[in-house]
Amino acid sequence: MQNGLSGGLLRVRGLAVLRGVLDSPVARDFLSLLDLLSREGPDPTTVADTFGRLWEALALESDRLLPDAWQSYLVGRILDDENPFSLNAESGTLTTPVLEQSRRDLRTFRTLFDLDAPALLAAIEDAIPGLTGIWVPWTEPDAGAETPRHTVARKLAAAQNWGDCAELLAEHHARHGAGKFGRDRAFRWENGGLVAVTTPDPMRLSGLVGYGREREPLIQNTERFLSGLPAHHALLYGLPGTGKSSTVKAVLNEYADRGLRLVEVAKEDLAELPRVLDILRRRGPRFILFVDDLSFEEHEVEYKALKALLEGSVAEPPENVRVYATSNRRNIVRESFSDREGADDDVHARDTMQEKLSLVARFGLRLTFPPPDRSLYLEIVAGLARERGLEIQVEELTERAARWDQWHAGRSGRTARQFVDDLEAELADSV
Image (tube, rainbow, N blue to C red; front, side, top):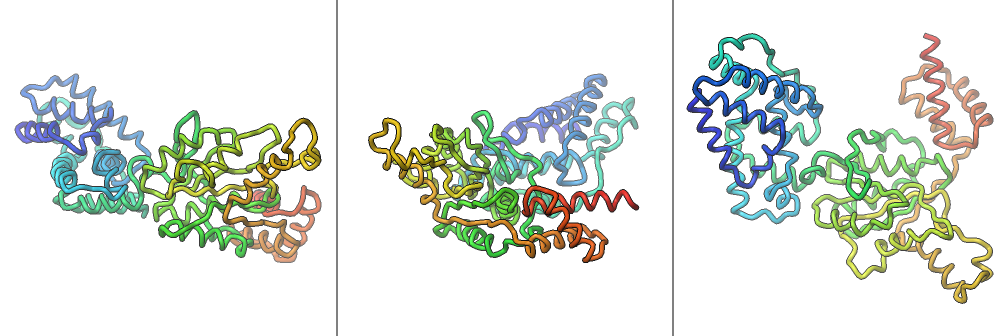
C-alpha cells in the first residue's frame, strides 16, 4: 500500500492543466494524509489529527454529488475549477495539447477517486492498528438529484478510464460554463465583484398564473438569445405586484440548464457596468443583466451608463449579455413640468428631456403588465390555491379573496399571493 501511495503522490505532483483542482485546504489535508501513510512508521498523533480535520471538513460540504464525501468533493472540484481546460472548453477554443494533457491529469485523479472512505480507513488501520475503529466512513445515501452536475458526477463514478471522459467534461463546460458559472445560475454585483446567489428564487414559468400573453414575447426572445439569434434588451413595466420580477426569475430557472445565467445589478451600481461587462464578455454562458425596479430621479445620472450599454458606446456591446429590466413606470427617468417648459438655466432643455426619455426607446422589447381585473385576480388566487393543495370550496374561496382585495392596497398578483399565504396558514391552524 505504501509503494502505491508513493507512486500516486508522485503523479499528483506532476499534474499540469488541472493542478488547481487540488489547491484547497481539504485537498491539501487529503494529500498530507497520503504522504504520512506512504512513510515507514507514520506518527499516529499527526495521522489522527489530519484525518479528523479532513472528516470534519468533508462533513461540512453541502454540495453532495456522490454518496462518498471525498469522491463527491473531488468530482465537484474537477467540475468547478477554472483552468485552461475548463475555460477553453467553455469558450470553444480547446486545443489538442490541452485536451490530451487533461486526459492524463484525469487518469491521475481516478487513482485518488479510488481512495474512498473504506479504502482510506483500511490504509490508516493497516499503518497504525491503534487507530482501528474510531471513525465511521463519511458516506450517506445518494440524494438522487438530476442536475447536470449530478449527471456528470455519476458518469465519472461509473467510468474506469477518466481519460476517456475529457470530452464529457468539455461538453459540460461548453454548455453550462466553467468555475462559478458552471456551479451557480444567479449572481449579484456587490462590492465590486460577482457574488453567487446560492439559494435563488425557485419560481418556474409553470407556477406563474395569468399574464401568459404578456410573458410569451420574453420567452421567445430568450430562446432566440440562447440560440445565438438576434435578441432584444427587454423592459417590463407595470404596477407593483404584477409579476414582472417573478417572470424574469422564472425565465432564468426555465433555461438555466441550457447555459442561461443571471447577474443582478442594483441601480446605484450601474456606473460599474463597464467592469461587469469586462468580466462577462469573456465567458461562454449567456447572461441576463437584471436591473429590478428601474427608475431615475432628475439628479441621478446612472442612466447614462445603461444607455451606453444598450446602444451608443464606443465599445461593442457583449454578444452574450442582454438587459432585462423592470420598472413601475413607463418613463424610467422622471420628467417634470419644468423639463417641458425649459425652466432653470438649461438653454437646451428640450434636448435634455429627449436624452432622458430616449432610454426607454433603447429597449427593443417593451412589455406591459397591467393590473389584473377581477376575473384575472380570482384566476390567480384559484391557481395558487390549487398548486398548494388547499381544500376549500370554490364559492368560499372567491368570496374571501374578494374581501381581501377590498381590505388591502389594490388588486395584483402579489395581493393574491398574500391572500393565499394567509389562507394556507389559517387552514393549517384549524387542523
